[in-house]
Image (cartoon, rainbow, N blue to C red; front, side, top):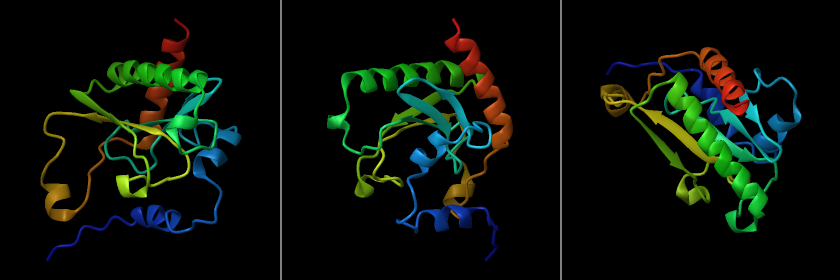
Length: 165
């Protein structure tokens, strides 16, 4: 059997095992180095952050500043702000990544697939024809073809341009 090593996954595995640590979204939103924290855009009530362990290039998450998991408890202002950021994110992804499609979703609860259970967030995953190949099926490994830093720079620039229109 051949082995394909992905040692960077250990950081993710360890980070999901420590339930006592502060919520990653609450922690990141307080910090000021958006590039280091992969935050590509901030609004008054929510922000857009790149997934550090993406399913595909340009995997974004729209996150409210409020630490809450229950979608029914958000005010209309926060819900509308997140929808605006989803729309702005679509424009930025289309402008910078030119995907053939985009998956948008929210996982409510651990059983639904939520890795960060206590802080609601939307996922946006760009997709391209042929982006699923033998690697995930046979090797259990996803190949990401662009560095996070390069994706951040393109997306951050696009968000600045699009939000000033």
